[in-house]
Image (cartoon, rainbow, N blue to C red; front, side, top):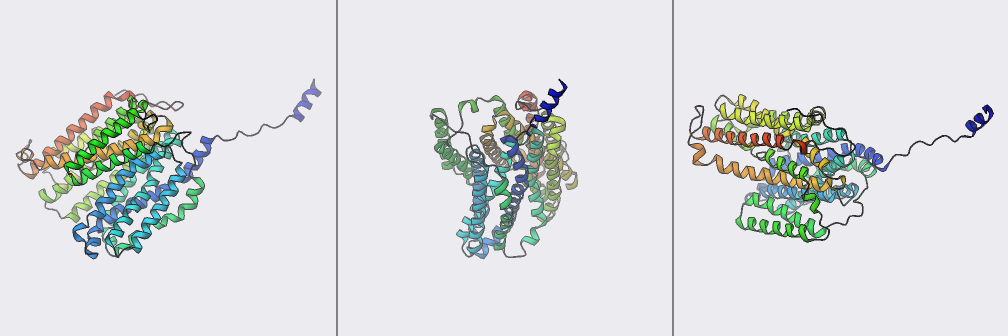
Length: 484
């Protein structure tokens, strides 16, 4: 018996190490590719701020002063369209192909703008292509994070992605003088730094497409046109554009209902968890675009501050938002989505209501309160996108991200329109409570009360939709039990 056992042991074949699964391979690649994608996206975000500072200089130097704002407006519209489009396409086209397309467009737009700097229209076209190319890296970053990374890592990367927007805004304020000190055409060359990351992106971006799914070209095209019309309407506010948007929306709805294989199926639309998260996002980000304009109004009209002084205070707010964005992922991992969203909404209520009450107590006080409400707006991004990605099958995460981006744009733009109408209304300027004087002070105070009311609605919705907010993918660690 002993001899047989020894022989068996000597003839046994060592067990081969377990081969990594496709998910594990893509997860490793994703971790190596994400820093490069984030760098490219950061460069694109910085350029948005830079061209917003110099667009008038471009118009003046090319004798197109009256059309100069197009340098800022049209690329912004393009950005609103491609954010939705790229996320959706990531369910059908591999991240690697998407990234290579984006890098190509980024380089083409940069060269076109630089060498065509003597023509306003070449500069405009180059800038639009450049924006479209840079955003690919951002969309691929988010979709790769939610598709391939474990839950705890996913939350961290979503928070970092959100922080980049505010970081770019903060740098834009400080670098304003430097940016305007040299010829604007050299800004087009800044994204060429991204070429250094091409080898890393080629090696490590996963080359995985939708399994057997065909691209619904007609449906996605209708969706892109719908998103584009929404963005154009909020930029130019023409009633004919609103009519065209409504017609396109109806056609899109008919296509989704009647097409044999639409890119958004009926099960997607019946997903209660995703729809609940979508409604939460609409409410949370309703006044996202209005936070800075109301701050400028207070500084100029109530405290007589110059725009440069206001920008310095605003930089503090942006820095706070950047820090909160970075730590929002760890916050979600520690406290869970429900508590993080509840805390975010309460910060918004406190920040807005506090500003309404203390509107005349000094700009420093209002800056502190602005930090509180911007912290709430920033912190909610990670749990919302995290919850949405878990509410959907992994194969539909790209579409989910695309629709979330579209909803964010619609909600924020609609909120800005509501803000503009209310703050200039006679009713809001007539008088306020707690001794607030009529006029600009009353208008801003009443506006803050309205913002606080919307934020309070967000608190209620978070509580109502608690079970949808905490939904988890199969196989992931359950979220901490919410007792609030």
